Amino acid sequence: MNRQSVLVVEDEPIIADDIATSLEGFGYAVHGIAASVDEAVAVLGAGLPDMALVDINLEGEKTGIELGHLLHNRFKTPFMYITSYFDEETVERVKKTHPVAYLIKPFDDRDLRVNLELAFARQKKRPFPTDKIFVKKASRLIALDPQAITHVEAIDNYAFVYTAEGKYMISHTLKSIEEKLTDRGFVRVHRSYLINFEHISSVSEGFVFLGNTQIPLGRAYKQAFLEYLVTL
Image 1 (tube, one colour):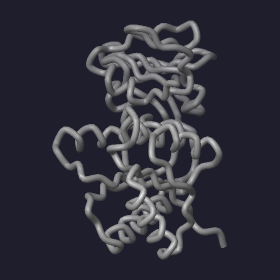
Image 2 (tube, one colour):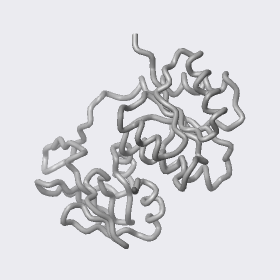
Image 3 (cartoon, helix red, strand yellow):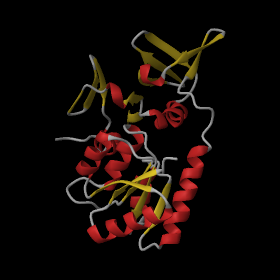
């Protein structure tokens, strides 16, 4: 039986090695150890772990929170933060990345083991495994693949869901739609727009482009959006 694998993202070598040793003792496989966001992305590009442990303060300019955005939206990999930061501003930022747990340093083996077991248990209790979502058109419910949706635009109390084939008008607020699509790789970039990250073709000052479609990038959403981007 294959062991569940865990990626360790920690820039303190001694701490990283201690965590890796503990994971092996718990019966997990260590998927790899990375000291920075770029190293972690390289490891993830070669294969995905079942879980990631991510320190917030890492080597380089990018933080663990930026990696959290990528794990949630691009790699679809559950993760927990291991950090000594627990101030209100940090907590509010990490909420937007949807970690499965937030473990405060210093922690002992028991804390780590219990949090991992609970996190893996929650993953097993996911609802019926389908990516399909449904939109109402006349008297029918039309099935859509979320990845076929390029963006969602809010107009008053309605919203338009856009795909390459057309658009669908639905009577929901953008906030309620965002709650259902955030876990599927969608990002709020403006008070009136929610976009599918995988459809981004380029970004310029004040705009995000989805092919030939230009979407405004609101100032209130710009910083959080830029944290999703991995640049070379």
